[in-house]
Length: 452
Image: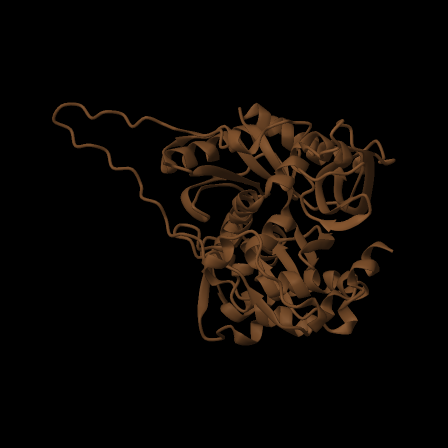
């Protein structure tokens, strides 16, 4: 019996749109297809032209369908952390059934009650994370269904974002002919793959370095506690190279990708690079060190601006340190630059799956991992937020495309094989956490510092 299901992650970035198709079977997640297409209609991680973005999404989806040999209808989409707000929520209802046995409808109702609050008209709930339920005063219940009680309470966290961002994302995806089954705040999805269990528990900072913006997010006790965005990213590095060296943006981007370095003191002073200069017939020669100075200056500015809010929140004292990911994180020696500025331990994350060994694929991998790990309560919460009533066993909504039969005399087409499976620590949803009593006292009040 085949118990597998497919999950499709859609990462709508400023420079590229990435689609990751994963098959979940027997608690193992395998990447079976990847699609990437240059973005259109996206600026600083936000969709600004719905029609252009929809066309780019369709092209990326088509590439993933071809590689995975499936037809894609349902996607898990990442929502930018721009202007993200994180709030506690709490709801309470009287159990409605005569038998007083709590059912799924009661769980939905208490979630709706927890979401009823005075949200500004320009904001929308993107995600609801139930933390615990209480039945007649008995606390710390993860799933109350089947229990007997007269009063059901739920406490959790809601993540809200500007309606414009959410609406434009949904509209573009719908125009591309797709259906959203989960909306996930991007740093929440990233935390599923870039952090290990200890870092998620005791706390760490994720810095996602994209083309249009850089996002620093604090994860502690397995929850996203803070997210701050700097509206500069890899495109600004490219722009600086273009202006300083008087070359085209296309040439500047190639110089950044092939010769870039985040630390000028570690770049070669002997190796010269040929640069085509606008208005000159002959190329100009510049050293790798000079190019690195341009790159380092911009990255230094970005990190320095992120330092203040992280210090104010006490995030730089967390034992997990900083994890860099996103396309810019591939720049050589960027870890050394981050260590110099933040004065904490720094490492980079790069996916290990075949065909995805580049940090810009981290979010796509995180989206499918997040969706595959959702338990029943998490699925119900997502359905409540989205106003849907999709049951878990009705997924996936992808179907295998029949392989065309070869014509007489033609060899049978061989489809791509599945890529390597994710690492074992990415395969299970709930792992045993280290003893909370062993945490250092200075981290015990971390939660309250963000909400109270």
